[in-house]
Length: 450
Ligand SMILES: Cc1cc2nc3c(=O)[nH]c(=O)nc-3n(C[C@H](O)[C@H](O)[C@H](O)COP(=O)(O)OP(=O)(O)OC[C@H]3O[C@@H](n4cnc5c(N)ncnc54)[C@H](O)[C@@H]3O)c2cc1C
Figure 1 (tube, protein in one colour):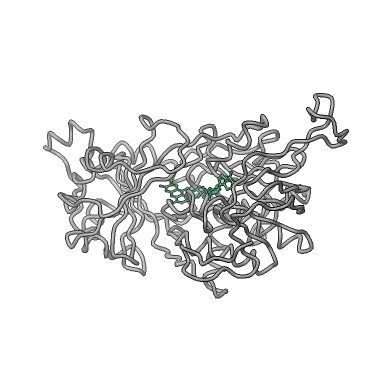
Figure 2 (tube, protein in one colour):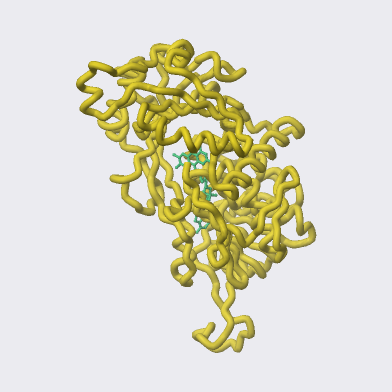
């Protein structure tokens, strides 16, 4: 074991945090968690919290926590969801964020900036019944007229009547703005480091720079004959072959994000998701200052996470750098493909999303991104709800469909409940969810319609 200086955090790793580059003799543990993204970190923390005597080992191929898709995300959270199960996962996690932010020493850089959906005529007609449904179940919403929106958002164009180009592009005048109040964002690096600290504080072990190459599949009653498990034997996962050597574990948790399929496909276990790239662009320019510091929506006096009508674009005001992030959410036309290091194409912004964005907000005209990146969403195209499923010796968590940050605490607790064989998982704030509801075999969820 070598103690090294972390390149990302700029501090020395604490004693239970290892960066290994040498072969290791076979290591036994009770629980092996593969992947220190937000799902793996949360799962490892709750597993260790509820099983303090068990040896819980978390491995991650990269050099620090949350450097995969977690680092690429916008860190947004919202309770505006229509599926009851989906909503409870998010609501409980948002409350947990609030608890961590207000009642512990960890700073998640949580901002209740709210979400704002700007809606064209047709889109508002289509979505109004959904917003009414949300209000009926108690979600806090506020509706703004086009005039109010114009008053609040500097430079926003709300009326496209007589604009032939807008008509050609299918751009409609804004009919309303609907604001979700219990929404905002956290800093995903701070969140990852908080979960890592909570896990290490309980005596959990983390090995960075450690890749799981394949899962070890064996027989429950092993006969030590080559070729096991045979079809007539009960198969189970016994750990993983890793860059450190074999790590044998009673239970292996696969939380490797979009890369989970690389471990699960070879053993014939379905990860129920497909990877799809999403790009993010950072714009910083004096012309955007007034827009960034939009007033009237939140106490931070910053632009809410704002969805531009039917344009496949959303904006997020980033106070730490004084910039605006532009997320492009194209769906059809963007292939499903697993990549190790996805890159953002400038063309997706400047030759594509930009055209619609400048129609609504001309202040973006001529402003070029100062930074950009891409990550991959683990898309469950069937019902858009995450999955926790298992087989003997294995628990898989994933398929969060672009919403994993805002459900991370709940999913970690469900993994721990699955491990315990519990029927229900206790989520933050005395909420409960049936563990099998988000399984594959006994799935019982309403599809997410929003
Ligand atoms: C552009 C973009 C914006 C997003 N915005 C939001 C948002 O606003 N709100 C929200 O809730 N969600 C958002 N998401 C989704 C969110 O980022 C994901 O749902 C979440 O990060 C998934 O976490 P994870 O732990 O499953 O995956 P990851 O964070 O990718 O973690 C998996 C980890 O496993 C490691 N790993 C993989 N294979 C191996 C192996 N064989 N051995 C060892 N380690 C391995 C990887 O290096 C990685 O660190 C966004 C996603 C993108 C791409």
